[in-house]
Image 1 (cartoon, helix red, strand yellow):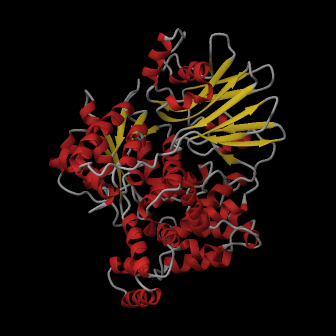
Image 2: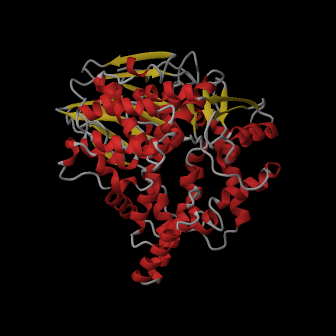
Length: 606
């Protein structure tokens, strides 16, 4: 199992086996206490042992408190802090932690295991509990190597993946294997070998004060964001910033430059074709901030070779094409630093997606106008085939619920048509995944009031951990680079929950963040367009990735096992290549699943 995760920890490995047969293993990417931070690590009498994947950012303060209370710590590593916090607080230690992590603590005295995952799900944790045995790992492939048989595709998860581009919630792509949800703990005992999962934290639904001013909120944001960035720079190894040139990464780079005694190292990526390129923006920001800037161009030749191999290396498929660019820039950064800081989480916490406001508008219109009038207006706008904004307005007026509209927008409409490419192995499912039902259930459980807050909560529960953070974790860890995200600092996130929605989303998206940007960084100009290491996907699927896509349809395991329908996908490929339609997002999901399954089966279409 350790050998399957060398990329997560190329610097060191360790194992602990208790007399009862319980075993812990760890791979280590040395960040803090490079020489003395070996894992697993135990307490003084060897009765409590811990392994950690990730970072506890407030571990220096926690360490000082533990020393004052009489604990003996033999290293400066954050993993050892977990052992002694558990001695004092038991499972409640999670409330003291600020960081990104999954960890395991074995309590030999009580014959008890504790697993935990960080608040937003930055670090993954898979497990199977069956027959009185619990097996767990940070990656699905590592878990599979510790099980006798774990290669059966879960058909419901596959239908979810094809619709959404990721596997949502506690499920995984492999049957009978679960993910520990974000902000959750799992407990298991030798005498009662049942996995019990409980949630320990939720983002509070706070009611902001009517007297809060934009100026006061901006000042508070500045203090909290500066602290969050500063905490993510703590390391005994070089640290850099992944810079796309957009608002989020520019803020991170600017505050990192302020907190550092040396020029910050920044990294970005560009392309040799297509109309998506961010190198000019990133270069401009780097020059103004005085960073040591490096960039690379991902060429068509690179894409043809890199993409199928990368998709095949994923432990669980993620059909977000930005994964490719992010992995490439992480590889560039890893040649110079061991830790990189990014801007993930800002959109979900600070209302960064324009669709939030569109959804709120659509709900207001639906309450105010007769359905027949809305239907007629939507039809007229669709017939006109005018500007994109009018096309979006036509969708706003269409007779659909806000949840249905949200799912349609975030999946580019493929959630409604993905069943067209299901193969025989999926067609007979009695209850395939329904993204609209799932989204409605998440919103209902949250109890959040207001359309905009409801869909922000949905994204925080689904899109953020299962796509955005899964993409960030895999793309960086496959390059043996640790990636940190200051926007997901607990204090900063809880502050965002207290900001009036009118300050978050109006009169423009991420209004509060833009106000901070304009106040603190006037030399960079006004509003910056949204960038997030986007890729020219449609062009790739018609050009350098066309051979891989065609080979997948002809010989891939996904079609041989009849998960997907060969003729239906062939028709989509033909339409896309001829420019008659843009099926890039759905075809990308097919390619991602196919490359992953080929690796699972030990085959290749290349």
